[in-house]
Length: 149
Image (cartoon, helix red, strand yellow):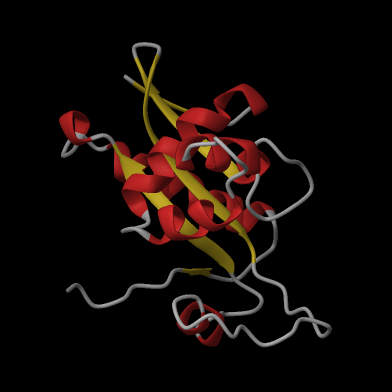
């Protein structure tokens, strides 16, 4: 049986590990740039997800559990335009900024651990994300897909 629940701060390290899977190297790129001295990429990601009141927080994550084990996650947040934001200049991150869909629930990552795929967990997470969009009165869910290499 699959159980979808709201993440808690103590899930931050697992969220970071799962987000690494879903981000196709983007999280590793970002976290390596913000890691403190002696801090691993996963530690930097966990530290960032442990924060509150920002888009990339455990507060915006749903956790999928099966038999008490974390087997997946979905991270989403309401995409709001920031009129004071400077245009992204980093060539790796710039395409993401250009594709933002303001007024949507942005699904930035959805991951199911490899050994649990094809068991309906991704579908259950997507259903929960769609419900979250409705609960937040957002008309649509958006995501950014880039062509594979």
